[in-house]
Image (cartoon, rainbow, N blue to C red; front, top):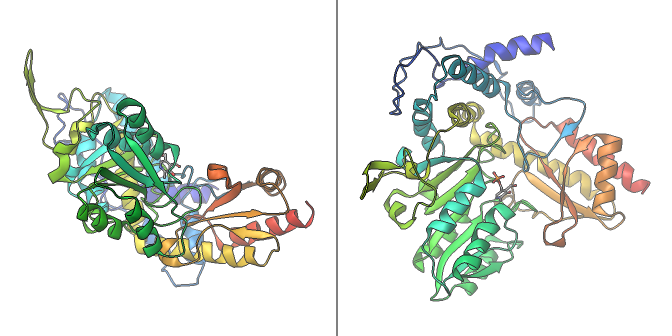
Length: 439
Ligand SMILES: Cc1ncc(COP(=O)(O)O)c(C=O)c1O
């Protein structure tokens, strides 16, 4: 443990692109790079990971060592909440201590984060607002859309409450009509056809989960964007399950808005998120929760201009170290490589599927094809209720999975991220087999 801590302490300082935290500010200025802190010498933490070879677990074992996760249980619920890596945690602690020592907000760190974070998702800094979670971003879009009674929106039937309730609130408040489509399909074109069949002249918005929470279906967002725009609809993505799980380029996807959590696959601190709004559509979203920092200028009683960027959706005093952790988490994952992370997720879930398929009475609800699946797999058994099975897996095998009660699926979801190992996948398969053999 001591060795691990020492290594991690060193590696915490080694993330390329991480800025230093530093000296006293007499005045808090929130423009980027205004922090005149001293620089931390670049070290070589992540570069000390062994070189990567396909099929070799050594690399991933070393990645796992970069997390504080206890070995007393097997954590496979990143779809619910992702752990932060030691380097990100360490930077958070340092920056918090530094700011508390000086009792300053450190708001310039928020501006500094906007540039690398926007790059991480293929957007411009002006298009990114930092939020507390995905729900906040979804709600900002839903309540800012200026929808009228009778306007229709289309969302996936498996939308998480954090994606669904902001629209349901508009149903209550403004009388909009919500139509849903079932995303569980054999192919992308089937999904597109289902959405297409719901579009009417009154459709204003199409909103989808990038990856569905209950069963981990990856939706064909680029094609949905084309479809939405061909019908003059706004296209919103709830990316809570995708940010940090796969490479994302919002410009290429072509969505109008995208909301995500930082505290799942990205591995930023709890209470973090981002909201993207395409710069040329910024004016279409009426800011609903604003105040200091949302303005370009104001004076009472009647002068007020929004700041001409997505930052208008942020207001008041913020926790800068939280936002800084989003930047550091992006940097951490970039060091490993998003394409590599995507492939690792497919590899781990692929092995899990193979193992579970060997057990009788198991039904796998996640699609098999790589282009419509991701790093989560959901299954159930006809032999045992999902809650009993999960209880036994937790108490007898120390597995932290997630039950799926949505849409009465009554199943269990397994999330597999970069700190999960092939050995753990094998343990899960054996555990499920053992419990089902003695229900
Ligand atoms: C698709 C989806 N949207 C929204 C959320 C809510 O995320 P947050 O707690 O960050 O608001 C989740 C959480 O699991 C989710 O899976």
